[in-house]
Image (cartoon, rainbow, N blue to C red; front, side):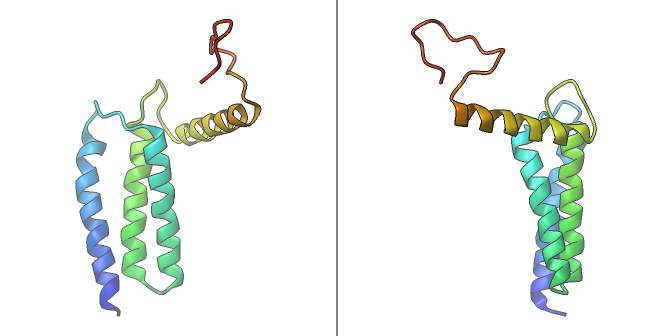
Length: 118
C-alpha cells in the first residue's frame, strides 16, 4: 500500500465530514452549478484512483461523490428533488450554450427595444 492512498482517503473523509451538515440542513440551497460538477469530479476521481490500484482513495472519492449527489438531489434550489436535478442542470447548460452561440435572448427574457441582451 502506498502512503499517498491513505493521505487521499483522509482528505476524502474530511470532505465527507464537512459536507454532512449541508446534507442534513433542510434549509440549505446549493446551486446545481456547484454541486453537479463536484459530484462528477468525485466520481471521476474514484474511477481514476481505482484504475491506479488505490482502493482506499477510490472508496473515499466515491463517498465524496455520494455526498455531492445527495446535495444535488435534495439541497438544490427549485421545486424538484431527486436525480432529475442533474437533467435540469444539463438542459440549463445546453440552453445557455445555445444562447451564447446564437446571441439571442431566451423566450422568457424581455429585451427592451434598443437594448442589447446581456
